[in-house]
Length: 333
Image 1 (cartoon, rainbow, N blue to C red):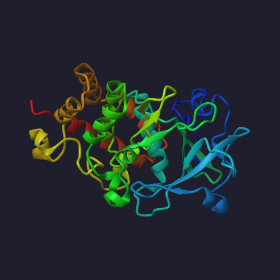
Image 2 (spheres, helix red, strand yellow; image 1 turned 90 degrees about the horizontal axis):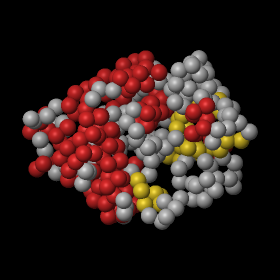
Image 3 (cartoon, rainbow, N blue to C red; image 1 turned 45 degrees about the horizontal axis):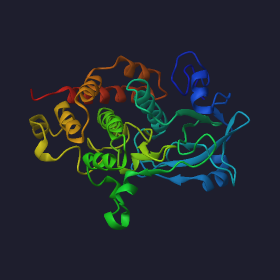
Image 4 (tube, helix red, strand yellow; image 1 turned 180 degrees about the vertical axis):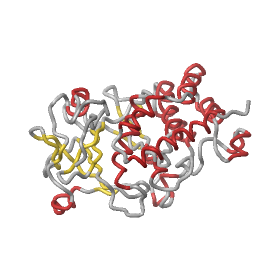
């Protein structure tokens, strides 16, 4: 196993396991080992029962987990898991697939630490054989263990593979999600700013898998709805060839494209400003979000350097961020 000199949760320097800050957020302050005392190869029967297929696009396993006596373990039968573990996918066609857990972890940390985006709590852990896994704390249960209602936007739209085809979660556009958010969320202006920030983030950090199921609403104790914390954030361009946006309808109608978008095939900040205005983000808030993302953030480069990505993948991640940032900074004016 690699020597650890940064917290596998917050990426703070000077830790060889989870930092107090990470333990507080991830594990309710309990001391927990970053080593999961099993390997995928040696526990095939237990793991086969726990695996759930998902996608990048369509390809990662999920394991349900709990913490027991300071150790992360697979969820025993009849018990409710409080964590989700994603090991390295077994799909050989994915480039640099061993880096997928570190990629998701880094991207989630950048969203939270640099841009203030509310995310699902997350960290890295390691199987006994040294294999890296991504672990995230479930946010659909309250402190008493009661299930919190949560609906992703594919469900809210009523889209399934039966009525909308096998690519149903990639149909529509980001403006469609905003319209439905406005309809279902009483305090929609606050949540719309959060949604707008997330859409901009996904573009700049090359998350080409930000589809309908990766945005959701969850119920509050008062019975109304807010946007769920962000989840499944990843720089997918490292692993697959994809476009600027996951949704087939893109960001805004083609008739609203900037000249830069029309001529280059890629959006600039003018297009995101148009998008923000169309979905009702307040002007002051819109300006501050655009300026935040249009400014190169040194902390992004620091977190990339401290991450658990391989050195070559760190360079690719850094390059993709700077390239998207330059595209975003362009303007017709």
